[in-house]
Image 1: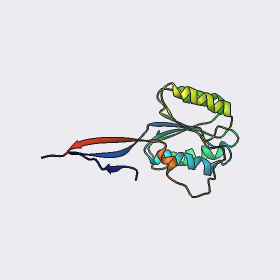
Image 2: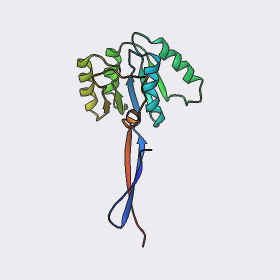
Image 3: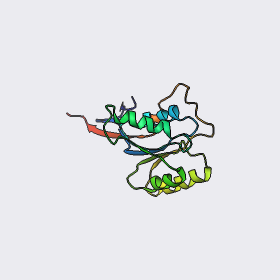
Length: 162
């Protein structure tokens, strides 16, 4: 969907293919418990990533229920990992952890905390997705931008044979 055969002027051609980023830490949105959770988790796992989700502090029950559903589904074990607790206590550990490759701050409502998490993530060059100023409309038609945020594009150059 996002890869391409790129036009090149010369005796070679190149191909760009998307690859998963790796481990994505997601702070679930607190305003929409199940639809918001699925809307942030699905794009990350559909692109091949592993996900660590910090459930909503106010409404953790839908996230725990979804985790039970995923545990009995065909999804491989360890693809979606759920943490419950306070976002202010858990998120800094995820932002500074060297094995986490990307950070989705959709559920962080405190601007100071979001800035601190971005600074912690910059130490090991994490991709950071920070939500816009207006809350997301989870019922609207989705686009692919959330999926594209957690992929890396690998370009391979090949010489043409003579």
